[in-house]
Image (cartoon, rainbow, N blue to C red; front, side, top):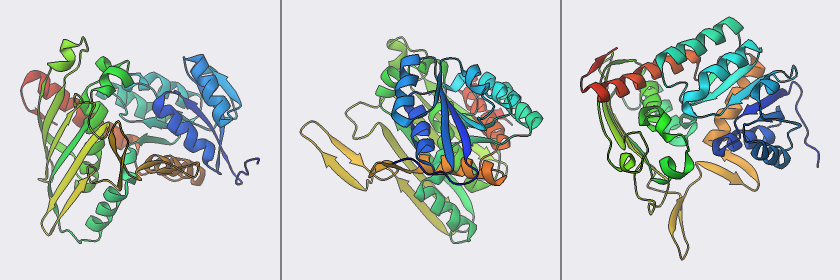
Length: 343
């Protein structure tokens, strides 16, 4: 059955067709108010495979060719953490709206350059911290806004990966650091809840396991952040958890407020599925139901599409991306120098 598009459909291109790039491609292909026009990836066969699977009309190995299509209104930039700046700058120069995957950048200079390019172009920029669309975090934000919890004071946030991620899933793990890869998700949530910017950051990291495997990036980070309004956040991430874990992701978020407490624990699954080989926790955070993409990733991409079509500012802007990058970069700096960093 031919897809029926809504009036005012957003013509869309995706730059990067890897694991998460496919999530963008899948969600855009399923949206009734967006048309998947083109896919670009250096891996030509992978791009061709994705185009055939999700019915994109154009396929390129060079992303500049995709940006050269006048009909493309917006692009998702789904590339390794350290490669966002140039592609975003080129996309804005070509007059495209941009949804860039987290982190926005791995340096403050790169983040500033992306924001400057967006402002010069007058186009929409959203950083895809999609976890804001997780039901638990969205409901917590609503409760805070309604005054049900009083004032937020402190959060503890843990987000870990198994060893599979830096050794098998990513070929470029040595080009990023955990504040940019994992902590950014939870720092974004804390900043959203606290409605304040980081004032002082103190962080530590250690390099043992991955270093012994020839991968030049720390095993874990722990960061304490004092915010301007007095709130405090404690963030920790590692990516050397054993692959026998029930899930690739281990997550916990606790929020202490003057009149309430929130506990978001991903280890408490919607249901558990066990085979003869392994038990896994299967929830409804994201995935497919009856062949349709569902969950927080789909919701965040829908939000970007609707923001562009309606001419509204997205929930997460370039300014947010820049301020978060400053805090994440401070975590890396503090861990490397052994000293707190004031912002």
